[in-house]
Image 1 (spheres, rainbow, N blue to C red):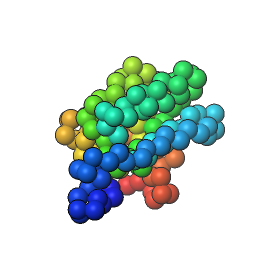
Image 2: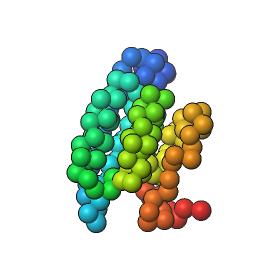
Image 3: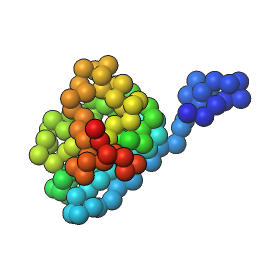
Length: 126
């Protein structure tokens, strides 16, 4: 999170952090890579990206390693998609910030590991 002129965070200064949601097809599956801070302000973009990926009918993984803030509302939306379509939606490779939100909600078991056995940096999972 960037610093505002007064030494506080951009969020505290009322600035909006930029977010991206990259989508790619890997071996016939859809991989979404949200990056940035996700809260109620950009929930609609996150919801739409996952909805569009699911509409393809392909396995959809959501790589959460680039998420540096995830509020409870956004996490609940991600988990709702996973519960609605457990056959094709997986939440993978959570950053420590995402894991903290999941733990606070008592839902850390909803987060999985990448199917390839490494995190987004290529480091093997324990």
